[in-house]
Image 1: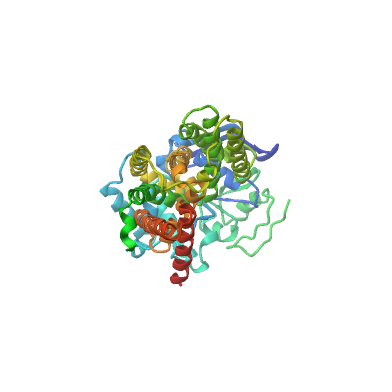
Image 2 (image 1 turned 60 degrees about the horizontal axis):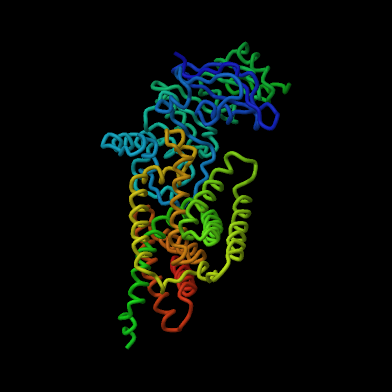
Length: 246
Length: 265
């Protein structure tokens, strides 16, 4: 079964297409980046997968179900974490919210253990009792990643994760992703094509329509297909070529 | 000599009222402050006044009439941003003024003795009846029970509404429930404390406490305690200097906030 399937999906906002005729699928252990220009529909695509939006036409399925019914299987790292830095919540409590079971259902001992494990995975276990605002940007990002993975999702969705990560943290971020990709499909939305393409398995190129969807190959053949994507790409790992804008 | 006034029953009553009011304002006010819905709560308070006027006009208990009005405005303001193309900010401005104006007009249209509208702004904490006390006690119990039952949801939604939806929390209904608690508190406390003092009590004790703790439960307890102490102080000062009690409490709260803010540095 595919982790995600999009079937003839379109979304409009104020009479304009945000997404047009999107057809693609994501497999169970894919590590995929969705790249494209601002306003190209990347966040909308993610929100459709999360069930935060419903498609105007077409169908979105997550593990064969409606996204609203597959919430147990998904982890989410939002983009702009705009919250009051003085908000009275600790690192531990923040990650615990990712383990929500339902109305009137308490958190259990196993939840506490899962939170500690998730914090260990992101190397933040020493900060458990720290108030969430008293962290650096990179540390906060790691806590929110822990929150996204604490329920052991089968699909991890990340919206511009690199935006809040210090450059020296990038390699440890990708190292973490490599550890996680054995257990789940990972989809990240990103601007940063260059860094992303050396680490992920697959790329989807989105600018209202889906222009490319497939493996990132170091061969020129693979790159030719990416020509169809109307953004400028600088690819690494190959003598630097600037690909033309269409 | 100074303690004589504590023998007066109306002062004792006012202090008991301060405790009951503070429990509501400390608990609900903590959410109002951390979720940054202070203006929204102000709008609900003023819109509720329309219900009060309607109550007088229909010769029904004005507090009871204010309940549906107040909850309806809470639902409108809370839900409007999601569904309609008016911003919540605009909706608040409209409901704030229209609610008050409606209330005044209804009261103008009511034949006979017109109630003192001023008491709805700053309340009348020194003239609380036994039945008022019992109603407030019931409100306290409802608030504490609801907040306890939904503590996980309220915290999650206050912090990150979008993420809460993703983990399966019914974010919008929970947010509406929180606003309904605000609306209910406003209605019950309006006559005793008044609309303006109510906003001050929701906001200031929680804002002071927020500087000293990063745990929500402790925040609520601290806010309640501070509210009791400062309200009592306000009542005593107003008695000694013969000032309006409600307005005095507001000034005491404001002074305390300024002091705590500068002490923090």
